[in-house]
Image 1 (tube, rainbow, N blue to C red):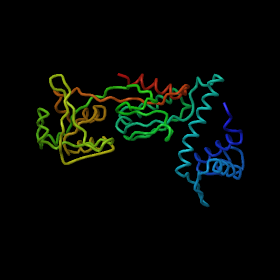
Image 2: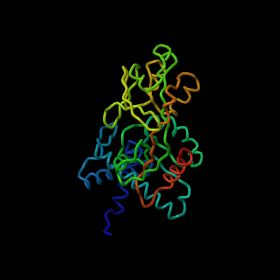
Image 3: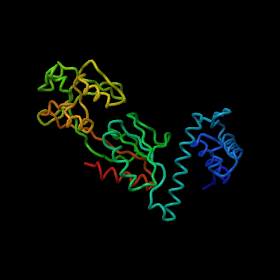
Image 4: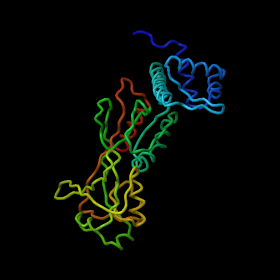
Length: 303
């Protein structure tokens, strides 16, 4: 294989990543025990090699350009893989370490994963966990994520998909709303109720509500004067304060149901579920922090 990077270039990449992480040439220089001028020369060397600007510089601060941000995410991931490879080769990889970046939907993060993070770090204290809560699909390579949790497996064959669980759906409302509007007995009654809408991020359409009828799953389009997008928990808050009925995951309203803040309705037509899938890129050498976190979530959540 032809050599692409000499020692000077590799050193420049490390100094560039330090400057990007710390937001300062001076802090990067202190961390690396070199001068700020050496960091500046390293960045200039890379910019000349790539033919793009990596930082916007002012007298007070530095800021990554769009090209610099993309280059940084790739370089950070590559350097982390080199560290993992060395640890594995020397037998140190038995102790997971480094930064683990995870993207997951807001309700699943709050309701299922975030409560478990502290337990994972008690097992593996050398791992730093960065959590990104969002319902949008992420690009692993461009954004530097190690893992993602989504509601469906993507078509990308470059990703490993493992189901964590099938989360049960329930329809809920506040006691005040039910006293005012009455309790629906069948899904057909929803046409006469305020049903809080949730817009799918993927297509901008309101999501249908799911019910079991005669042993089969059916979808019902509902309507109402309230809508939300981007965060399912907004619908829960609206329902809690009497806005109307809302279909959501049982784990997001379990405490409210126990406390009487919300009441489950249409239980006879319940039982529908939606999956949550754990995704991560195919790799010849999966880092120990990714491997241990995958095993941990499968242990805790796999149905």
